[in-house]
Amino acid sequence: MTIFVDMDDVLADTYGKHIELYNKEHQQDLHINQITSGEIWHNVPEIHKKSIKDHALQPGFFRNLKPFKDAIQVMEALYNKHEVYIATAATQFPNSLLEKSEWLDEHMPFITWQHRIMCGDKFILNGDLLIDDRTYNLEKFEGDTLLYNSPHNVNDTGYTRVSNWLEIAERLL
Ligand SMILES: [Mg+2]
Image (cartoon, rainbow, N blue to C red; front, side, top):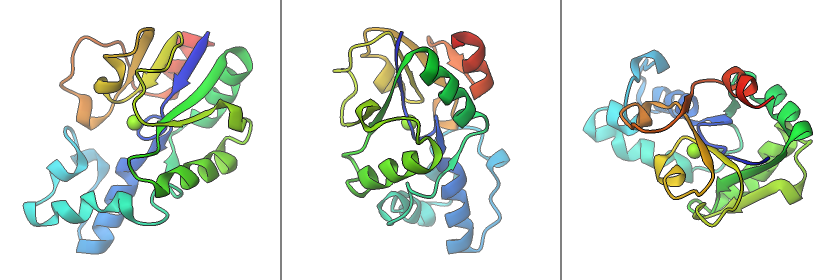
């Protein structure tokens, strides 16, 4: 199988980083358990929204995201069994391209550069499966899809969902 795997909110935890920065910037005590739906900026007061939206422009934001639990081990096993490619939007925030590449070098060095697709739109990808947290990426993909659970997609219906990397292992290994 040819499998495409998204990075943000599938391999790498952007909510955790947003909360860490937000708590520091505004002396708050927001916790991930309080975010049950929506984008992170939907969960803060109006006057703080812009600062959250600016996080992705900060140098180091994408470089310092934490990998989700079990993501590294399961990705390595998947990589050995299937044709696995990273498929990540990296042109929306241009500084993210180098940072995502460095993040992969650190956390998933087994993924060679030939298997890293740093892209814009994903519907041009041609393969068997796309794992992503954004339905706008999944809806136009011609192969199978897995929707990775995230607060911003809790109300989206019609997709097969996974909520952690052990579930992905059970399905694909
Ligand atoms: Mg994503």
